[in-house]
Length: 78
Figure 1 (spheres, rainbow, N blue to C red):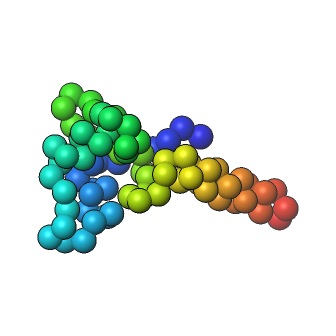
Figure 2: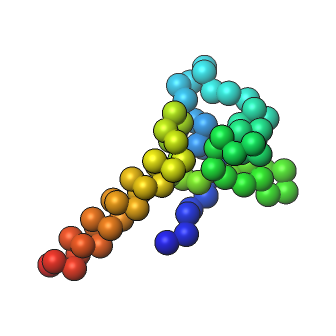
């Protein structure tokens, strides 16, 4: 299943406490240099929704894969 993208501003609000949210320009740099999995489209930042700040993209992706596989297996068992 392809990764879903969410608006950078919504991701920042989800991952950081109010008053501690980094500037969007900073987060766009994180996307550009690979620290954060996402895309810049027409100057707007988009982040893969499964990304969690402080957790490696590889780890987050593997966890999401395991969760998805578990849900699929549970549905097949019923």
